[in-house]
Amino acid sequence: MGCDSGGMVKPAFEVSENAQHTELSRAFRGDRPYWWTGETSLYNEETRPLLRQFPNTCESGPGTPSGHLMMNVALFYVAARGITTFFIWNSTTLNKGQKWFLAFLIYSLYICWNAMVFISRLYIQAHFVHQCIMGVIAGLFVGHFAWSSKRLLKLTKTLSVVIAVFLILSSVMTYYLLLSQGMNPLWTVSLALKHCMRPEYVKVDTQPYYLIMRFTGAALALGLGISSEQRKAVVQSRISRIHMLLGVKGGILIGRMSAIIQASFPKDDMIVFLMLSFGLNVALPLIIISVLPHFLLTMC
Image (cartoon, rainbow, N blue to C red; front, side, top):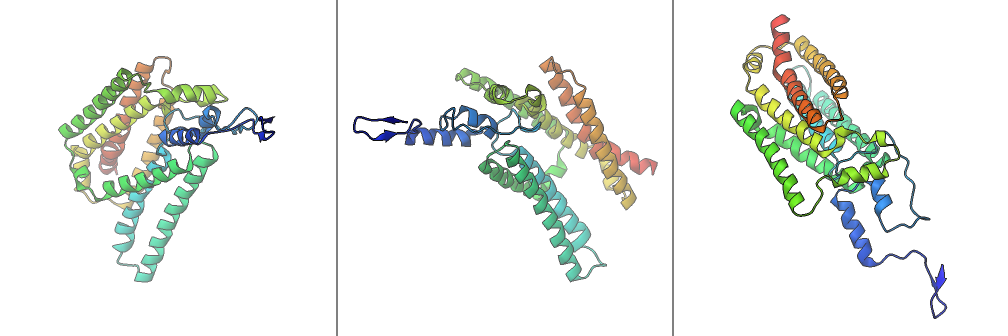
């Protein structure tokens, strides 16, 4: 505390209105709470909060919007719509009241699950509230688009390759465009390493360029899998519930195996790591979409 010439007490920490607007704009730019609290001028050394960190706190990509929420909202939106449409509303053994009750139960579970994801992302300080809200909105948009767009089921091999190449080239062009303007495309990585209490919490699979390889590979695999002859043979066949159950269990098992393989990739050479990750993210969806269902149909 101090006194001015008129004897009035002045606070030791004073923030102007312009500084507050600047800090708010930074929060909306994509900062994560665990590093924003260490960078902001809204606090001094006495008032700066010390946030508890967890293994999932120190994500190194931008925080806007929440990718975890967007993925869960979109994925389970499609799952909820599929279950209610094909197994509940089209059922001939359920009456109207039972259909409404089961549909209400499915969507209640959908809302509760995403509410828990929402709260967990805030609890570990991975996101601000507005970033989670934006993730929900984006997830609903993506989920509705995926459910209602029939074009996704008609992707050809050529179009899927074109989309994948476009994603890679646009990412590289954006990277060099930012560099040419004196901006650091990987500005979040240095902040993550600076403010994460335990460096091992900063995982390479949360960095922006790994995510590009992941989603580009998945987009390529989606097109190749949907247009494959194996998938066409499965779609034209009668699929029993046993096949569906085995497909779900097989998909989960393959997903766990891919996580183990991913963890074994060398991380000292980023180019090698990204190329291996790209190949894995092409193989995983392709196997689940076309190879595994065709294998089960042939063997069972």
